[in-house]
Image (cartoon, rainbow, N blue to C red; front, side, top):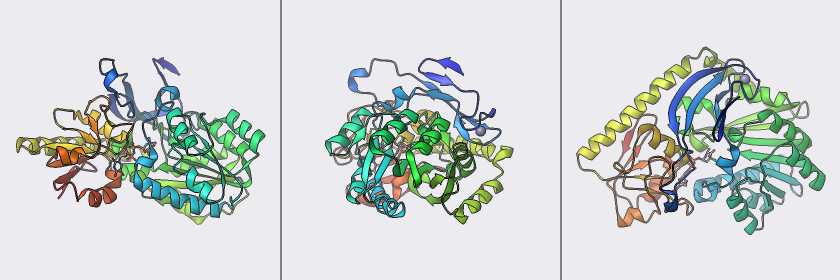
Length: 412
Ligand code: JHZ
Ligand code: ZN
């Protein structure tokens, strides 16, 4: 490990300690959720190298610069409830998982519970939910809603305290948070201690294969330390005598997988595991060629987006953006698209409104700007919700959309 102010450079794989090989560098960027408040505009924004590497042994794709978790997650701008599609998604997740884990009346722990968007429906389904959420601002919102939440980073000592005070859990859930965790092996051990004999750990993670296929380079930012496929996850859980027993592919966040994990030997293993492992092997990830192609596609994608924006602006189009997502900030910084090119970014999250985007400093405003200061074109920075956002905005926005990936294109 090497020091860097506020960050650490790692030299070995966070799952198997194997050697790391370069994949792609996106330059240095500020933290993707470090929205700049007006009172901070004269302060420098720390930037960190955004470098993707992969393990030569277990093939986990990961970042080798790990920014301190305290800097990234104690105060957190991303508010899951601000995205209606995620609210609906987690309502369904609560129904399905409480039934599958037979968790009615039992302890269900959610790691990374944000503002309680899943804790609330879990409680409605009759489970006894406990949220673990390091971001104080989000944990406070959940507690105000009457949802028990501990403002902590999950790990062995928190798991121990839960077991001591509440017993072992029938179900542990972690959605879009395994990618954020640096010390994966101790998290796996903590899960093994927390799960009851026949309990399930269920996690949703963005899927590496979808990122590569969709040229979703914008989903790379410092919070996302790991870009998972099934094979390395299997190896991680085996290190703690746990076993992945089922896997599903999901469309959320540009393509994700949901894994089901239990104590080794306690559950029937689904055939879907072998199928997905076979598909992954056929990709030839270990020979590096998919990553070389990805890196070329990323450059081509940036060039196409800049060309399209340049052409439109030459024709006098007024351009704004929609969805101040974390990934949008990777995109804006990597492509160097700033306030000279964009009027504003409209977003439904109150916490982000009135700030500037990190690095490129485009003002974030409420959706009302689409009426008061209507653009001709909207760059979709939350393209993962295109199917929901486009029909909804049609009433108030008559212009065209730019969908930035895999290659920038216009949607009339
Ligand atoms: P969204 C998130 O990344 C957060 P982000 C996190 N870092 C993670 O791991 C990944 O997901 C997987 C707004 N919005 O969900 C809300 C509208 O304005 O794509 C959000 O600010 N109108 C934990 O930040 C942003 O857009 C709408 O109609 O890249 C979307 O952010 C909708 C649907 C959303 O994730
Ligand atoms: Zn490894």
